[in-house]
Length: 143
Ligand SMILES: [Fe+2]
Ligand SMILES: [Fe+2]
Image 1 (cartoon, rainbow, N blue to C red):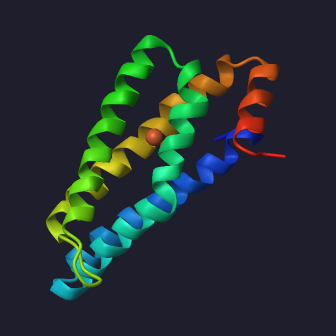
Image 2: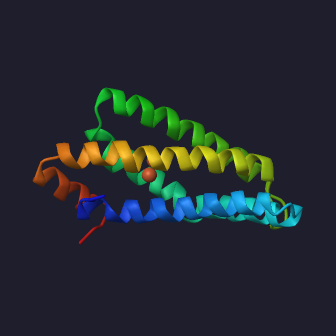
Protein backbone atom coordinates (compact mmCIF):
# COMPACT_ATOMS: atom_id res chain seq x y z
CA UNK A 1 0.00 0.00 0.00
CA UNK A 2 1.35 3.44 -0.89
CA UNK A 3 2.54 5.42 2.09
CA UNK A 4 3.43 9.10 1.86
CA UNK A 5 7.16 9.55 2.58
CA UNK A 6 6.35 11.83 5.53
CA UNK A 7 4.47 8.97 7.23
CA UNK A 8 6.90 6.16 6.48
CA UNK A 9 8.84 6.49 9.73
CA UNK A 10 5.65 5.92 11.71
CA UNK A 11 4.65 3.05 9.41
CA UNK A 12 8.02 1.39 9.99
CA UNK A 13 7.41 1.68 13.71
CA UNK A 14 4.07 -0.04 13.15
CA UNK A 15 5.94 -3.00 11.68
CA UNK A 16 8.13 -3.13 14.79
CA UNK A 17 5.01 -3.15 16.99
CA UNK A 18 3.45 -5.97 14.94
CA UNK A 19 6.64 -8.01 15.28
CA UNK A 20 6.58 -7.57 19.05
CA UNK A 21 2.90 -8.50 19.23
CA UNK A 22 3.65 -11.64 17.20
CA UNK A 23 6.54 -12.54 19.53
CA UNK A 24 4.22 -12.27 22.52
CA UNK A 25 1.72 -14.60 20.83
CA UNK A 26 4.37 -17.14 19.82
CA UNK A 27 5.98 -17.14 23.25
CA UNK A 28 2.60 -17.82 24.78
CA UNK A 29 1.86 -20.62 22.33
CA UNK A 30 5.21 -22.24 23.19
CA UNK A 31 3.74 -23.27 26.54
CA UNK A 32 6.98 -22.20 28.25
CA UNK A 33 6.04 -19.85 31.09
CA UNK A 34 9.46 -18.17 31.22
CA UNK A 35 9.33 -17.40 27.48
CA UNK A 36 5.89 -15.81 27.80
CA UNK A 37 7.06 -13.78 30.80
CA UNK A 38 10.17 -12.70 28.96
CA UNK A 39 8.21 -11.65 25.85
CA UNK A 40 5.86 -9.69 28.11
CA UNK A 41 8.89 -7.94 29.58
CA UNK A 42 10.25 -7.13 26.10
CA UNK A 43 6.89 -5.60 25.21
CA UNK A 44 7.02 -3.42 28.33
CA UNK A 45 10.58 -2.33 27.47
CA UNK A 46 9.58 -1.52 23.90
CA UNK A 47 6.80 0.70 25.18
CA UNK A 48 9.29 2.69 27.21
CA UNK A 49 12.01 2.84 24.57
CA UNK A 50 9.94 3.45 21.41
CA UNK A 51 6.20 3.00 21.43
CA UNK A 52 5.36 5.67 23.95
CA UNK A 53 7.21 8.20 21.79
CA UNK A 54 5.35 6.92 18.71
CA UNK A 55 2.02 7.46 20.48
CA UNK A 56 3.16 10.93 21.46
CA UNK A 57 4.20 11.75 17.88
CA UNK A 58 0.81 10.70 16.54
CA UNK A 59 -1.04 12.64 19.22
CA UNK A 60 1.05 15.77 18.78
CA UNK A 61 1.61 15.81 15.01
CA UNK A 62 -1.19 13.84 13.32
CA UNK A 63 -4.15 14.26 15.66
CA UNK A 64 -4.88 17.90 14.68
CA UNK A 65 -5.60 16.69 11.12
CA UNK A 66 -8.10 13.98 12.07
CA UNK A 67 -11.83 14.28 11.52
CA UNK A 68 -13.98 14.31 14.66
CA UNK A 69 -14.93 10.66 14.12
CA UNK A 70 -11.32 9.61 13.58
CA UNK A 71 -10.23 11.57 16.65
CA UNK A 72 -12.87 9.84 18.78
CA UNK A 73 -11.71 6.35 17.77
CA UNK A 74 -8.04 7.31 18.01
CA UNK A 75 -8.36 8.87 21.47
CA UNK A 76 -10.29 5.89 22.80
CA UNK A 77 -7.76 3.38 21.46
CA UNK A 78 -4.73 5.34 22.63
CA UNK A 79 -6.22 5.82 26.11
CA UNK A 80 -6.99 2.10 26.41
CA UNK A 81 -3.53 1.08 25.21
CA UNK A 82 -1.78 3.61 27.45
CA UNK A 83 -3.69 2.23 30.44
CA UNK A 84 -2.79 -1.31 29.39
CA UNK A 85 0.90 -0.47 29.15
CA UNK A 86 0.78 1.22 32.56
CA UNK A 87 -0.64 -2.03 33.98
CA UNK A 88 1.98 -4.09 32.16
CA UNK A 89 4.79 -1.89 33.49
CA UNK A 90 3.37 -2.19 37.00
CA UNK A 91 3.63 -5.99 36.65
CA UNK A 92 7.33 -5.95 35.78
CA UNK A 93 9.67 -7.79 38.11
CA UNK A 94 13.22 -8.95 37.33
CA UNK A 95 13.12 -9.24 33.53
CA UNK A 96 9.57 -10.60 33.58
CA UNK A 97 6.09 -9.18 33.17
CA UNK A 98 2.54 -10.53 33.30
CA UNK A 99 1.99 -12.73 30.23
CA UNK A 100 -1.80 -12.47 30.41
CA UNK A 101 -1.69 -8.69 30.38
CA UNK A 102 0.87 -8.78 27.57
CA UNK A 103 -1.25 -11.13 25.44
CA UNK A 104 -4.31 -8.93 25.82
CA UNK A 105 -2.28 -5.84 25.06
CA UNK A 106 -0.60 -7.43 22.05
CA UNK A 107 -4.02 -8.20 20.55
CA UNK A 108 -5.25 -4.65 21.17
CA UNK A 109 -2.02 -3.23 19.77
CA UNK A 110 -2.28 -5.34 16.62
CA UNK A 111 -5.87 -4.21 16.06
CA UNK A 112 -4.91 -0.58 16.60
CA UNK A 113 -1.95 -0.72 14.21
CA UNK A 114 -4.07 -2.40 11.54
CA UNK A 115 -6.74 0.27 11.88
CA UNK A 116 -4.14 3.01 11.54
CA UNK A 117 -2.40 1.35 8.59
CA UNK A 118 -5.53 0.28 6.72
CA UNK A 119 -7.96 3.09 7.52
CA UNK A 120 -6.57 6.11 9.34
CA UNK A 121 -3.28 6.74 7.54
CA UNK A 122 -4.71 6.16 4.02
CA UNK A 123 -7.51 8.63 4.76
CA UNK A 124 -5.09 11.13 6.22
CA UNK A 125 -2.53 11.04 3.42
CA UNK A 126 -5.22 11.39 0.75
CA UNK A 127 -6.78 14.37 2.55
CA UNK A 128 -3.70 16.37 3.52
CA UNK A 129 -2.49 19.14 1.28
CA UNK A 130 1.17 18.98 0.20
CA UNK A 131 2.12 21.79 2.58
CA UNK A 132 0.37 20.01 5.45
CA UNK A 133 2.19 16.78 4.67
CA UNK A 134 5.44 18.73 4.59
CA UNK A 135 4.65 20.21 8.01
CA UNK A 136 3.92 16.73 9.34
CA UNK A 137 7.22 15.45 7.97
CA UNK A 138 9.12 18.39 9.46
CA UNK A 139 7.48 17.89 12.87
CA UNK A 140 8.45 14.21 12.78
CA UNK A 141 12.01 15.02 11.81
CA UNK A 142 11.67 13.44 8.36
CA UNK A 143 14.25 15.07 6.04
FE1 LIG B 1 -1.61 5.01 17.35
FE1 LIG C 1 0.64 4.25 15.25
